[in-house]
Length: 455
Image 1 (cartoon, rainbow, N blue to C red):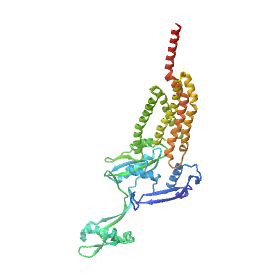
Image 2: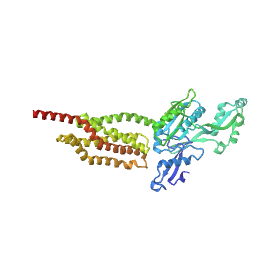
Image 3: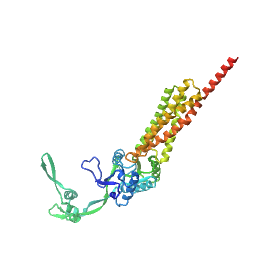
Image 4: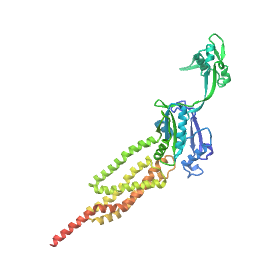
């Protein structure tokens, strides 16, 4: 099915645990790797990777008996190492009874599927593995005088094997294990005839003293902090992770659980919350440092605040650019806002420094503002164009890493446009308002001096 897509070069899978068990997995899980052709070889080079993933997901869902989850190899591994799950969002349900966990997990999955943006919603498989159960007939064992331990030992030796010696090849040592051939181990009729030794001599068929049943049993039993748990996982597409988690948690709270069962959350959003907490500290500190450096540069808070006024409008432009491109707010976008603050302040710094220089040379306030705005037009535009055009390739990128580059570049470009407009149009007016009192005071003093001279 994967090779039917013209964008796919080849596909292969790894099932279970490899010989070097750096990634232990049960035998019911396969990691499928899809190698894509270069984008210029695609029938539609403008097709995004997200659209291709959606098409592949829709095609794989038509194959029965499996649950598929699309991710990146490194992203998948880090998610599993950090939070114990492979998805963006996970609901961990804890309890004792696997059947109750499975039923409750299905209800939780149904609630998560109803949240906008939820994709690849699935419940961890905990049942469905065929298990050979050997149930002893205790009345028959007592009648024949066979101990339960002897029955277990005989069945274990026939199916699992019994070590009878060792063989040496150089420094290597290998165990010699004797057991029934695979064809007989897999045939229940042969196992029914397995001879069980009697205490007084002779044998009796296994079917006389035990019942062999093949029935679905636990596929795997996962534990966390010593408690059984089952995981409901989901990936997020088409919206930001933070708002999705809030909606998903609200939906999960509507599902009632039995006493003794509780839920916890995991997944990539844990790193989002951690990064958000760090940004809540980093962003104010960064803005405070910028304002402090401006005060040190100009020697007064008034000019520093005039220049710093470019930051709010720059942030507004960044948010507006994200909204226009329908890109959710993310950590990379938050980093873009930090970079944008410095660029926005730089433009204001160029103009205000020049205006202050003209005033120190004796120019009037209005004349200095007009000449400074006209003279610094080219430097401000050059600074804005260099910074914004440099981010255009990142903003339009659709290849590897685009999900990180696009939000950052979009924020910077949109914010630079709005901050440039502020610097050229609004900042001169703010500077005049901030220093208008000085002009009025100076005019009053000059009038008083003229009156005194006339007297």
